[in-house]
Length: 85
Image (cartoon, rainbow, N blue to C red; front, side):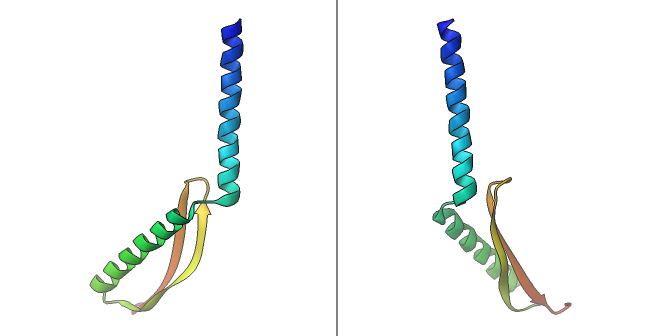
């Protein structure tokens, strides 16, 4: 009986801890280093594409950025002008 009581207490504790982590993550979002890393990687990819794709004109414009809570990733959306429109 004591073992069952301890087990249920640990289960409640772990569920509560998991819930608190999710609440903090939803309110705060990702840490600053995750945002910086996402921006650096995205800029690197954009630079590579600009070197190989001659249809891109002008500089890419950041139009939206947000924390995707469901997939736990930081999303950056860019608008890019191309020769073809």
